[in-house]
Length: 166
Length: 372
Image 1 (tube, chains in turn green, blue):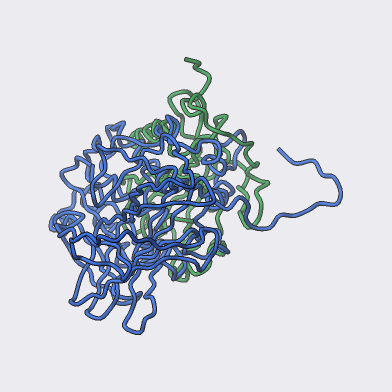
Image 2 (cartoon, chains in turn orange, brown):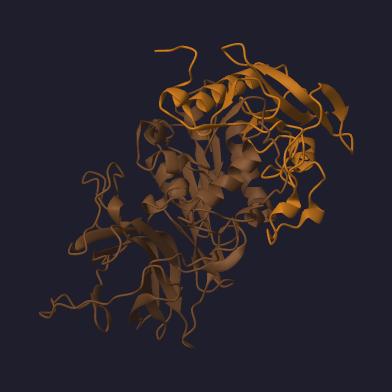
């Protein structure tokens, strides 16, 4: 067994070179620069931590955006693990006739994710929104989808979140 | 979508799963439905997801490079019965060729003592953000992440929408899915669908032109009393392909109103173009898994291709995706079989088919280095 190769690659998966996170084709939105930043979102109820490093068991760093209630010291976490770009790479305009009333969602609502303002501000949950391995700025030489590798990373993200003070 | 892969590893702090429109066996559900490659959709998906600093597993070419079900496809499927934590699975009848089949399939096999399923009649994204459904999400998380005692303790196991028309929907609850039902066999005859068990002594056939949109064969059954059809269904056909060593078979189960027009439902997340249900099968992929197949739910191996000669008449068992539709007396249940998709082939999120090319192809008149 070649330890340098993922299970997915050993099983013969086809690959392509990824598009650089800041060179994606419109209408996709490029990822902002990789930088940890903490801010308080509009309304003051939600702490936002952009590009929080989450270490995996093999030392690879995935980047997560964390949204958590400002007023509660400890809150249960909900993990979102999808390759669509935690920064909201997929614009609402990409899919017409979605039937979603966007006027009722805050501007922080990203593609296929709940609105963090009520969920973290009012309902008392923390969100851990991960860019999976090899996607966007997250480390790892390759992105795989629905794979055993993703399963292991998901495990590590869950346990990382559980170990946070919040 | 990867939540199943994580859940079977049982992270000690993973308390519950909310699976809103999942994928559990991507070969059978999305990339290669019925053995028919769906490259255009996956190409769109790759363009949204194949972004990073290294390489990306290429799902746009996946079903071309791996047309048969192999250990790579298998690696994306887990043993869902290993999932034991509370789970709430949600999908919609509209998610044909995408989330519908797999969300149900995995949920059925969870070992969780607390598991719920909700199958809606709406569109994927509008249902996700609707107040009543955000409330369901919150109740579920409150129950299992905060240990709040709430109405989840009284939730029925399965809740589903019975579609009468696009906007006329009845919500129904059961202690299981699919609900207990009577499986009704219909026979294809020269005059339509028949529940008469007697064999016709005359061999009969109908034909259509496989490559021709608008060419199809139809079999009608007039409904004589209020009828709900919910759960699984399948179609058995004996097929001969005279000019091609294979045949892509597209099947629709349609609801025809008293005015003779088809009543259509949401398809995918955006369009009103779905029949009551669809089924797909590439004839060369007809080999069944005898262990997993049921009369109402054939299960194909996709391990080898059995090509057709013009003289061969082969038996195909075609899976119709799960559905729930209500009929009134005087309406018609219609089975349509054709060689091309029923859905709009202009829209990349709706296209379901083996098209080897899609969308704009730009021709450059100066040489340009393609970027890596």
